[in-house]
Image (cartoon, rainbow, N blue to C red; front, side, top):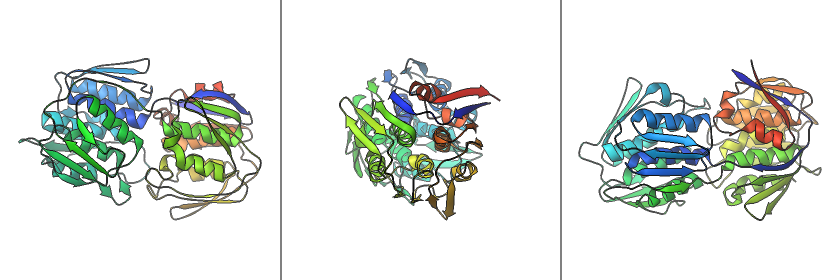
Length: 421
């Protein structure tokens, strides 16, 4: 097992290139199962999660290669059953359900694993597949989905208790592209990752309109062909580096970003007094500022403030003068980073799903434990501004979603080192 030693106090300066979006790449790689023809996906981040997805495709029988940011697949003859030993490691592996049912009319997938940040059920995925005519059975830790007579178009509402589901919208969309007739998805997720998936499916020959809106209309086709696609930039990785630059940066520049995907975070940073500037060529510049003030935020579905940036902003607010109030509406239990930040000297009090943060002058280094992907990023960010050397344990969490995180931080002046325990 590895840990990251974060030596605090160094000012960050320079340019960092943002990788392709993990949350786009995973369902797009899964979507290549919809055709037996060759597909090429470019700008795929080299992460444990993307590597698991590649291994799942290979186990299903696809010829798949991942190298230099490209994933090349040919899924000529594939199985309908995804194995437990791989699926259990990653929640997003459930997105193979839609392609397998759409193409093979059946799928058996183990219930997925992933971060422990609260209840993230797949009931909306299954409800959508049932609306398309599939039979669903959950038994013995497996989800079995059968569509013996094929899938047929339907009107489906994908809204749940905490809003729309991104993976669920994608799963149903992937199944519906080969269904008979027209499918209308109401309450669809608005996230740019859904639009990115739709763009790839349309390049394969699908007929999808309305991605990026609440209503997606899909006209089923008989078959799909191969395609090439470039994955969009990772807005959460970009946001994490923006927060690091806001905390302890002197003109940190982010390359390969889409600022239109990050308006909620950028607005919050600017309202808090941080200096964020858009530059030509898909770049953003961030610098820490002295005239800062506490701020309030509430997480919500895109384009509101993303839940995947909540932990990192808690770390930033920990040393922001005044009172900041952070309310989580998507995953109300997603505050396991708070006790670790308090171990470093933060003053954070919880009231149900709201963190009340009184800014302190500076955090102090301490051994801390990462509980999930974004919490681990928050602890690294906190360590950058802390006094002393912070030990971030369970580093495998951060490797799920951040490509070459230590190298990228070192490239802009951070003093971090990965060591074996």
